[in-house]
Length: 99
Image (cartoon, rainbow, N blue to C red; front, side, top):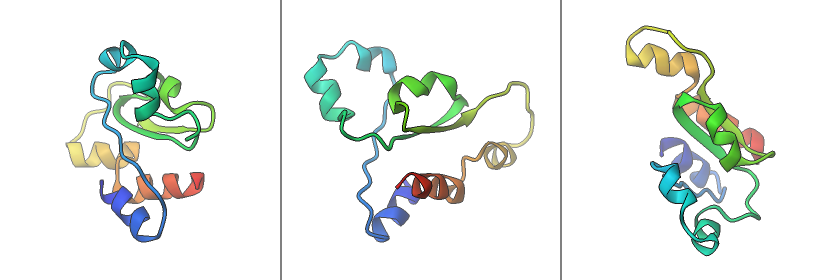
């Protein structure tokens, strides 16, 4: 949310969508899915503190995913979040690169 606020303050139109249950989302009708993830919006960034590959189907070919692509790292959460790029700075810069 902090990255979205920074980008909005810079004048960018940013929309944050929470998709906690993709199975439930996938079962919705097309009109609902289109209202949440419009097809004309192609610059999508997913942020997932888990395996990133799963999210590619929701961000599309022009989207990006900030997530994990390995397994087994062990450290305090703050260290791991920085390691995997789950920081305001990285999310902001990644989103800027897509605008």
